[in-house]
Image 1 (cartoon, rainbow, N blue to C red):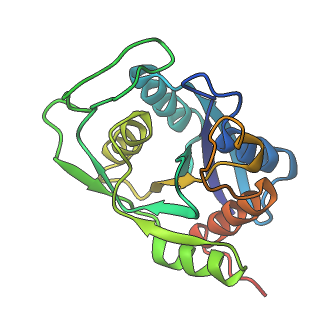
Image 2 (cartoon, rainbow, N blue to C red):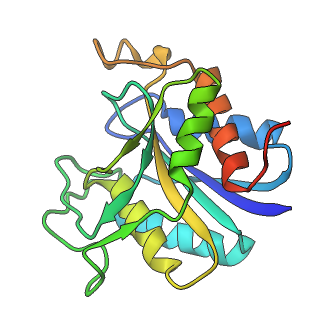
Length: 204
C-alpha cells in the first residue's frame, strides 16, 4: 500500500476559506481506498510553508506527495507540470511579507517538472465527468514556492510528487464575483481519483 502525503493551504488575502483546505480535510475524514493517507494544512507563508512540508516528508516518509492550492479564475482541476525557481509576489503572504524577484532555492535549477503521472490523472478525472486539464504555470506565489521546494527536496529519490491547483467553490462567489467555481464534492472526488492513479490503483 502506497503512503501518500496530501497538503492544502489555509485561507489567504483576507478570504474566508480555501478549497484546498476543505478538500484535504474531507479526504482526511473519509480516507482514500487502497492508500495510506496522511494530510496537513500549510500556512500561506513563503519559508515556513516549505520548511513544514520538508518536516512532514521526513516524518511520514511518503511514497507520493501531492500539494493542493487555490487558483481563482480557473474552471477545472489543474495539474501543474512545472515549477520555476522564482518567488515574485503581487501580494503579501499571511505573515505580511512580499517577496520580489528572489529564487526559491539559491543556486537551484531554473525549473523542476512534476514526477506525477499527470496525463493519466487528467484522463481519469475527466472520465468521471469532472473538468480537468494540464497547466504549465503554477504562478510565482506560495503555491509555486511549495511546488518548487517539493521537487527540489525530492530530487534523486524514488518518491513521486507534484502540485494541483483547484478552482474556487460556490461558497466563495460573494468574495470573488464573476469567477468560475466547482462544487466541493466534485473537487474531493477528483483529488481522490488523482491519488488512486498516482498510487497505481486501477478502477475495477
